[in-house]
Amino acid sequence: MHQKISLANRFKVESLWWIITLLIVFLVMFPIYRANPEFDYLWINILFIVVFVTGTRYIFLLKYTPISHSFWPKVIYMAASVPIFLKLLDFLAEFNVLIDEKGAHSFFPLLATKAQLSMGKYLNTEFVFFGVGAILVAVIFAFRCLVSIWRMRNRGTV
Image (cartoon, rainbow, N blue to C red; front, top):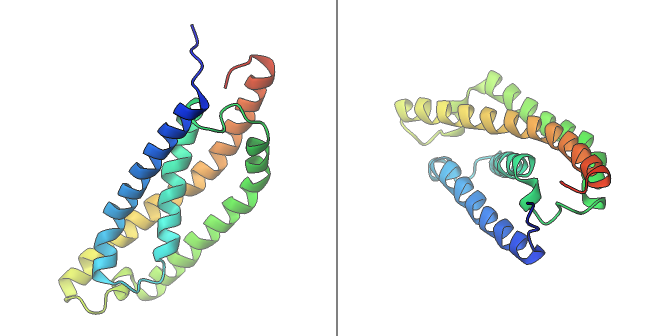
């Protein structure tokens, strides 16, 4: 009793998820951007959030995505997963070195001391959460693609 989902419906669901992802990015990043619009790691932080949310969604809901029955996008991702993993790891390590040397509060020089500490804790927590999550998702999704290719070839499912 497997219902095949049309490609048009998969693109509609994908569009809805991208809107949700952008909303999550806005909600997480707004306090940081408001406190320091020139935050050096803004785009890296956004990348971590997008990779984490999208990768998690693809791991668990792959059959509802446009690439669900496509072979080459999965193979390409599997080949690119090691460089993606290493680059994400490099970004997180670079941020952690900076936090160790200067402290997270140093990103918010215009705030009062108590607000600096509060925002520094928020920044450190969310950056590490989404960074580690993105790194894990980058690895796990590669294996999910492998399983999906095997299922597609041998069982006709995703």
